[in-house]
Image (cartoon, rainbow, N blue to C red):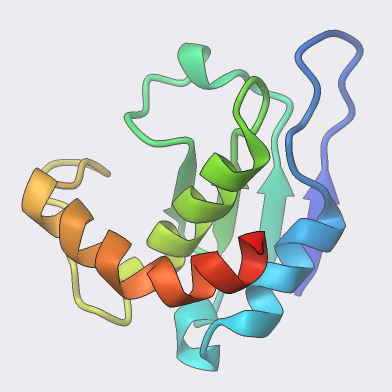
Length: 118
């Protein structure tokens, strides 16, 4: 498993670190990680991405668009993305979750989120 931080030269800075990502990986069940090999803390700004969530898994890479977000918000989004496959929550269109799917995932991840943000 590899954690990559893309270099940036301007504001806003990344809101999470490799240490934050490692803490998330260590706390969740192994099957939440699956075949993921790379966690990429991207230099891309979320507003330029066209996505509706700042953390998206694409094949074996979790792309994390943390710039301009609060650290805890990105940790929550990473936990939600990690929980999608093991809970068999399949976004209906593209990477978009319905409100009810998101609510169920948020309820599931809260014990992990609370431990990470204490």
